[in-house]
Image (cartoon, rainbow, N blue to C red; front, side, top):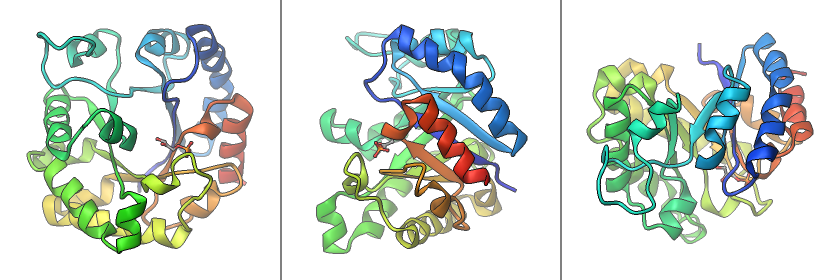
Length: 251
Ligand code: 13P
C-alpha cells in the first residue's frame, strides 16, 4: 500500500525567515496529515534547508538540486555530502525548469540519481513533456526516454527508494492543469515502464502528478489508481493553502 504524498516545491521563493515561519506552522499540518496516513514535505532553497529542517525535524525536506560529484571545481554547485551534513536525505532531480534553464539532460539526471542512491538518499525524479511534444502526440516517447535513460543504472534493490513526479511542462504555473484522465494514463504508463525495469518493486514506487495542482483539484488526482500524490508549486507556498490541500484530500 503506497502512502499518499503531498510535496511542496518552493522553487526560488521565501527568505529564511519566511521559510522558518512556514516550518513552525507545518507542525500542525504534519499532525493533521499523519492522522490520515498522508506524508507531507517541502523543498526550500538551499539557504533555508537547515532552518526548515531544524524547526520541524519531522517534516520531509528535500533540496531542489545537487551535483553528482562529491566535491570539486564546480562553482555555484552544492554536493551530496554537503546536504547530508545538514541531514537532508531527499533531492528533486530533473525538474523541467532545471532542464529548460540549466541544460539538465536525462544523462545528467541519471548521474545525480546514481550518486544519491549510492548515498542512500531519495531522488524525487521529475519527468514530463513540453507543450510542443504534447501537441505532436509524443508524450509517451518523451517519458520513455526520461525514465529509461534517467533510471538506467538504478539497481533493483534501490528502486523502492525512488519517487517519480509526472509534471507536464505546459501545466506548470499556467493554471492549465492536465485532466485527471491524462494524469492517470501517464502515471500508469510510468508504472509499466518501472515494472519492466524493476519488476514488482514498481508497486511500491510513489508516482506524483504536478502542474497547477490546487486545493480545488488535488483530490481528483489522488483518487486515480496510479497517482500517489502531488508535487505542488504555487499552492504550497502559503500555510493556509497547504492546509486546504490536505483537508480536501482527506474529506
Ligand atoms: P505549480 O503548482 O505552480 O504549477 O508548479 C508545479 C511544479 O513545478 C512543482 O514542481
